Image (cartoon, rainbow, N blue to C red; front, side, top):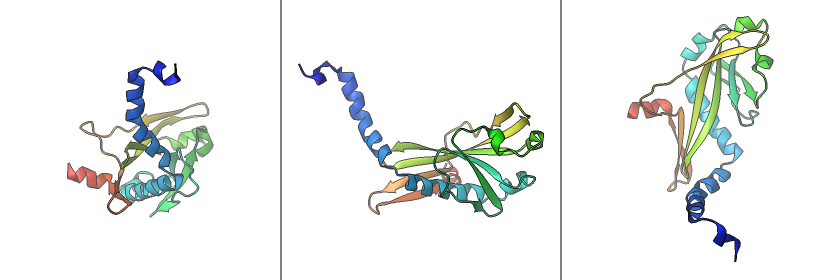
Length: 174
């Protein structure tokens, strides 16, 4: 009896259904993701409202789960300080910690929706209370009516390139 005869048909169906998505996800390179993150960061932070809200702070804190070495360093007057991995946020806050109350921490991530679609999202958190022991964060909640990413990348098979659609453009289409 061979090994495959012991696997249930449901397992086969699930593996076959997920195979195209998993194989494509492995093909997304770090340099491609860096490019997508940079385009989304530039579109998101080009708005001057991000400057006025954080003018008391010299840098915008941005957490990323990819290598930040090649991410943009600034957009307009917004200069970025990247937080990568999972270090304590205390490592990035100037002392006294209480002076950071009201400051914004951003987080950027991506979702692979299919072989030809990748969304990049930027989330915001407000530091409500910071002291030596803890940092209390309040997560921003976007509209509840439907999901709109901050950047969507769609692969065009005809042109063999990725097309960028900003969150603002997606919102205007609704």
